[in-house]
Image 1 (tube, rainbow, N blue to C red):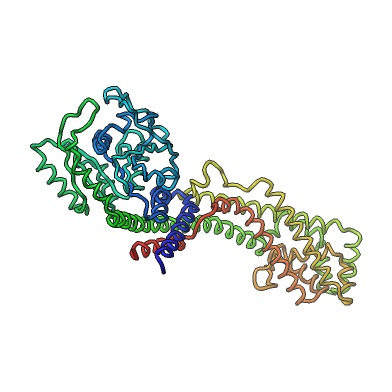
Image 2 (image 1 turned 90 degrees about the vertical axis):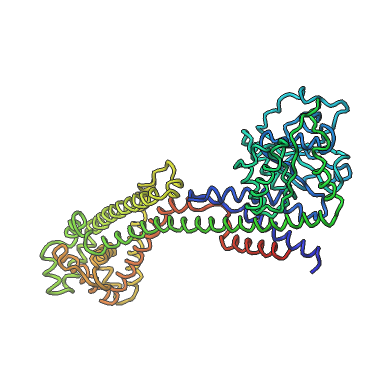
Length: 581
C-alpha cells in the first residue's frame, strides 16, 4: 500500500473515531463520568485542531507553541526571537485579546484557512513602523471570550516553522487556561518557558507530563536565571526532566538581564534558542521526523482516551440495564400479584360473591344441579332470558373488584420502582424533581376499559365455542351473559392446573359455575375456555403495566450513542496505527 493510501486509511479511521466520540452520550451520573466527558471533549478538540490536519497535510510547517506560567516571559522571549516587539506588549495592530501566531510570509497559506485550530477565526495582524514602548502598552484586555487567532507574517521566523504565543497555563482566567491547553494540544513541538524560582510548580509539570505521554518534542526555556545560580538550577531542572521521562528535552537557559526601553532582551540571551529553531526549520527530514513523532505519540495517547471512554460507556450501559431491570422487576412482580389475586378466589368475596349468589339463587339452584342438570337448565334458562340484569351485575362487580386490584398493584409497582431509582445516584438524576411513585393520569380509566375489553373477548370466546349445532341450543338457553359470568367465576377460582378449584370459596358457588359450563360445552371445552380467558387476562395486565413502566424506561432512551465495543475497537485500531508508524 502506498504512502498516500496509508494516509487515506488513517484519515478514514480518525474521522470514524471523531464521529463516534461526538455521538457518545454519557448521560448518567456515575463515578468517573465527568472525567470521561472531559476526555471526549479533549479528544474531539485534538482531532480537529491537530491530528486530522496533520495527517491531511504532513508537509505543512511545524507549529511550535510557546507556553508557560504567568510572568514567565513568554512574549518577551518571542519578541527577542524575532528581534523586535511583535506581541501585544509591543505593537500589534489591532490590539486584541487573541493569541498571536508568527509565521514566515511564504507559509501564510498553511495558517490562513481553518486547517489547524478551526474553532478560532483568523485576524491578519500587522506590526507598526513605530512600536509602542512596553511602558505604554497598557493592561491586557479581559480574555472572557477568545474566539480568534492573530496571524502575523514575520521574515525573522524561518520558513518551515511557526511560533504561537499562548496564554498562561496557570492564568486566573479559566478561558485563558482552556485556550492554553487547546493550543499546546495542537502543537508539533513545545517551547515551554519557566523561571528559576517557578520551575517546580505543579501546573506546568502536569502539562509537561502530558507532553511526555504524547512523546512530543519539548524545549524547556529556563528564564531569568541569576548567573550565580545557573549551574545549580539548571542541573536540578534537568534531573527532574530525566525522572519524568523528558530527558530528551532541550534545555535553554536565559540569564537574568535588564530589558531595554522597548521591553527587549539582549539579542545574545535568546541566540541559542533562535539557532536551534532555525536549524530545525532548515532540515526537512528533521521537521518530518518531529511531525511524525508527535503525531504518532498523540494518536497513541488518543487510543488511551478512547479506551477510557469505552470503559465509561460500558459502565453507563450496565447502569442503565440495572435501572431498567429495577423498573421491569417492580412491574413484573405487580403483574404476578394481580394474577395471583385472580386465581386464588380472593375476588370471589364481597360484592362479587353477593352478585353471583343473586344470580344463581339459593339452595334450590344447587339441588337442581345435583338432581337433574337438564331440568335445571330449562328452569335456569327461563330465568336468564327473563332477567338478564343479575348477570350484568356480576360482570360489573367483577370489573370493579379487578380494577381495584390492578390499581393497587400498579401503585405499588410505581412506588417500588421510584424507591429503587432514588436509591441510585443515576436514577435520582434521571427522576430529578418528578414524582413517579403513583400511577399515571388516566390509568384508572385505561384499566377499566381493558377489563371491559377482556370481558367482551370472553363473551366472544363463548360465542365461538357454541357455534356447533349440538351446543348452540344449550348456550342460547342459558344466555351469553350468564355463561360469561360463570366463566369469569371459574377463571377467578383456578388454583391448580387448568380446572382445579378452591371448593371452599363462597360455599361452592365456583363449582356451580363450572358444572353449568360443563353441562353446556363439556369438560374439555371448559378447560380450554378458562385457559384462553386467563391467558388473555394475563396479556392485558402485562400490557397495562408495561405502558406504566415506560414512564421510567423512557428516561433511559438517550439520543444517539455508540456501543462500547465499537469504541474499544477504535482504541485498538488507533494503537495499531501509532505502532505501525
